[in-house]
Length: 116
Image 1 (tube, helix red, strand yellow):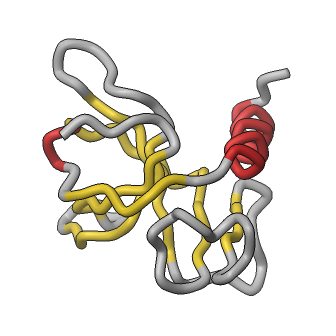
Image 2 (spheres, helix red, strand yellow):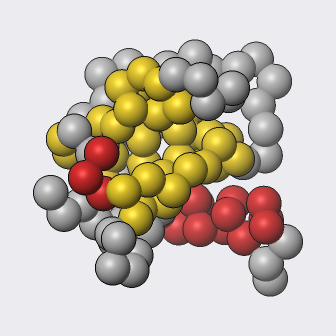
């Protein structure tokens, strides 16, 4: 399976302690990298925190940002929860985010890493 940057996919995402994982939606932040075909992904949660981080991107059901994502409920893309996985771990593609949301994510990633 070859997913591209800004695809929303289902993957076994590790819990904070890395002891186990659960299949969850994630956003591909890169295309496949290198000969081992790793992809950097960001965690997507349906649990929108009351106090959001600057790196959180909210996707509300029935909004323009939500259309085409394949998500079924209001969700938050947590850009500070990143992991690099082999592309082979991707279970399936759900959808993709639209261009305005891509631009917002690029801005927040630059802010998160202090890139001007």
